[in-house]
Amino acid sequence: MSELQEIPIWAFFLIFLGLFAQSTFLFIHSRRNGHLRWFWGIWGMLNLPTPLIVYVLYITFIIPYRERRLTNDD
Image (cartoon, rainbow, N blue to C red; front, side, top):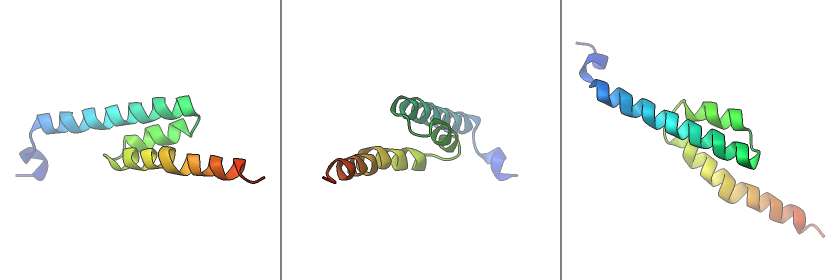
């Protein structure tokens, strides 16, 4: 038997549902904040959960750090 035949169909459905939900969340959230919405949406459809983790780190650490650094250059 092939490896794909051993995986139940509901597992494929759950994986697709998780990828679709993650991609939709990343696209909508990045569109609201103006950060490369198509990149995050497409990357969110490729694997799970790496894009979500990277996006959260990017939004919570890198962008605020850049904004603080730019405003404190007096």
